[in-house]
Image 1 (cartoon, each protein chain N blue to C red):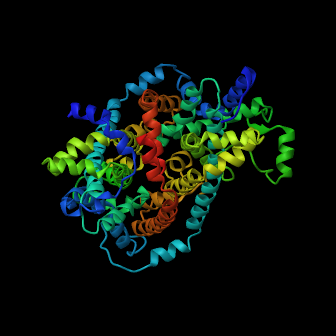
Image 2 (image 1 turned 60 degrees about the horizontal axis):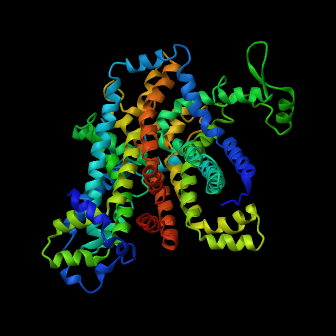
Image 3 (image 1 turned 90 degrees about the vertical axis):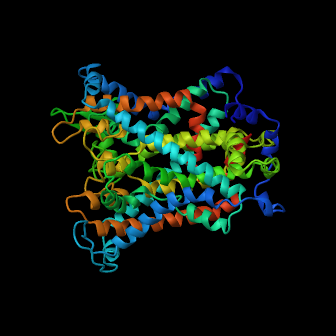
Length: 263
Length: 351
């Protein structure tokens, strides 16, 4: 964008940029540096040695996988219906769905707490998976429908004339063509499910074995101990999978998150 | 399945798919299009069942006595909880914080996002490295980073360490951190004489939350602006340069006007974020000290799970929050009619 002539200007602008990103690095540096204070790597050893350490990750993985599966399946079928099939007063259904687009999760808190204990799924994965998935679907449908609108109808008509049923059109034409959007959606849902904090805390509970990865750093901050170094070591370990996933799938992450931003 | 995927994405049909033909189902071939109600119902029922049920249930609970909670028998008393909310200073405080947050976060994010995007669209070294550093905060969960930010803003944390080494702070004989003379003099002359270098205090806690949230979302603004700057026709910029516009002039007069749809999307995104805000204020300051960083999310949470659980009141607050969010989404869909961000994004990605 900026027109730069010569090596000196290039180096100069890079230096300006380097100074500007210092505030971004400070917390990351604090996290790593702080986690190695005191007992050094021993902090990590005691975090990993925490009884049920792997359960934090296992719970987050289970919740993310099921949320992604539900959102993917329901989004694909619904978007296909909205975009390419005949439905009476289709737009009414669509706008009812879009009404839930900006729902703050805290609004669901009171009814969910009561309902979940009444239905008897309090403390189970479903108590978390269902609301997280339901909060994602309006938006993923909006995106996917726009995307499918751009696929020519002639493709589906041709398949129909050749005798393909709706299911075959869905599996053999739609699903492969929507793949680029599907990847973005999967990344978006993965991040939202993995980073969820409020719903798991309230609906899954705060007892060992029932916690997710976002609760890991704070489990060292109890009434009795406020062990900074272990909290920070816990934060590093909890953040690590996300950073590795992001750096190795950089493009997909940026797309998926940007998709989540533009509603 | 795998073979069909591979051939379909490489097939010559793809360029055709890029051309706009949305909504074609309505023209001509209607009689042959199969019914699709069964296709949308699972998703529709899933979302409608959960979210609209919850809203309805919240609406009902909000009409119960304000201090009602589950085991007690329920009896509808009317709008008492709403009256209570409108008379509650804390409700208005939370709303004011939400507004301050929205304005500050929006202004800083837009400015910094555009500046970062412009610089990274220029020929700088190590651009991938910088992009990753700017975007990493977006990816990491707020709940994971919250204890780190508590540490960053701690009295003996890195922020004060930096200020100390810049000569703005010093440690006195008793080990307390105090401003150096001229900073103290300066602060007392702008009416901030009581400010001490302890950031989690009523005067500054809100700004700590705002700063942290901005830290974790500039990357998003950056990515959005970076993408839309890439869409600007290079000839427009070329023309400005031929007319003698410098770098800054080109950015302000040519590039920024072309980013208007993105700025609008970012404003909406920020409004929703401000209304939804929970993780950072809850985990860094817990809305305190003395409610100085209270937001609607933390307020509702405190009413629900605080010392005394007020389910009726929390439900009324939730319904009020819902109306605010709905207002934002109506404004959004009205403005989206002009710019259609969803469609634009979908189109860009197909390329």
